Image 1 (tube, rainbow, N blue to C red):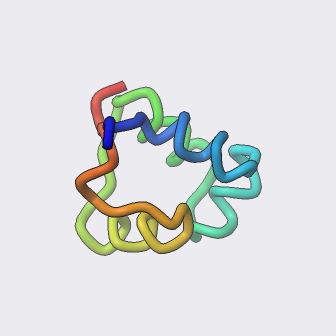
Image 2 (cartoon, rainbow, N blue to C red; image 1 turned 120 degrees about the vertical axis):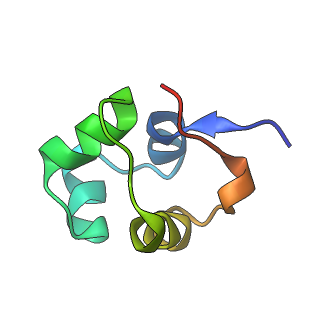
Length: 64
């Protein structure tokens, strides 16, 4: 399985950035920073991302 960026995974989940941020319990700016590689989520946030998007950690490419 090919790795995908956070933005691609979010789009495949059919979530807007605003919807995804709400589901993840972070601000839209925080999610934007993760998607562009300006900052990175910590371990609990990564686990939440996997749960919300329905993907495994190995599937996510955190490099924008």
